[in-house]
Image 1: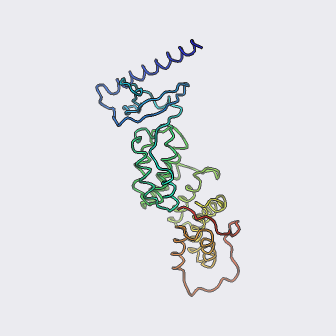
Image 2 (image 1 turned 90 degrees about the horizontal axis):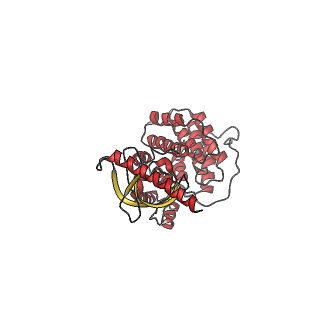
Image 3 (image 1 turned 135 degrees about the vertical axis):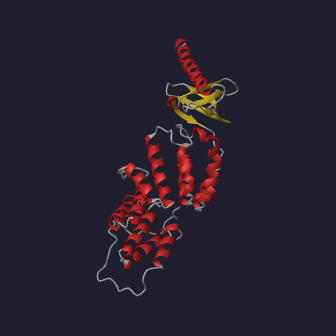
Length: 315
């Protein structure tokens, strides 16, 4: 037992010494090291070691510059050595949830930015902050702060996590769409290829794809993609109203206003106060008033049953 502990300490010490030498060679007398306010972090290394440290910067290679709590000697370590990291978060989660429930995404984004900003230099590391960054991006997007998204995405540019990189590419696409850069958005979507229906990011992908297709006036593919949101997220009150709204747009473009009216009625039943219901009602106001009644009943082409009134969706 004593020998095992001794071997572990020797191995950890060797890693720290190697890291310290790397940090010194990269920084010289400090050049190239971005110093920040110390951020406490509980580390678990891939080698199995656990340690409580203070992160103080990154060197030119992206190595983390850190020191043991209460000590002054600085060491460096490559990000690839970390298995998981837990950093403290000053965040009132109840207030954050309340802001999101009220669709006050501006306030929610401000709260998340304040909580995450001290750890910005370390956001690409595998930590407990990654889910909060995802929520931050959502709040920025729903609040239409499109120009604020690329700088946040850039924080994750060194991440080796494929799922994280997929999410960052998707939000880059959504930001480009919001800023009217359709060609750039299409390039980002093409990078992603086809996304599986079971992927948690699939609704954002379909939503972005519908935006691109409608801008390209490809209404039938847009309609088919919008239908996927309804078919695969019928019980998801974040996305079900989005899918309904997008189909309203497609039916209106096809001049099938009576079908669009039916879907607007469904929106008013499912989520009367949703942002998407408001948008659908504004669009409905522009429908021709003197149109002829349909010759035969139409359907939305999407398999779902009208639902009783449910809890309001967030966006």
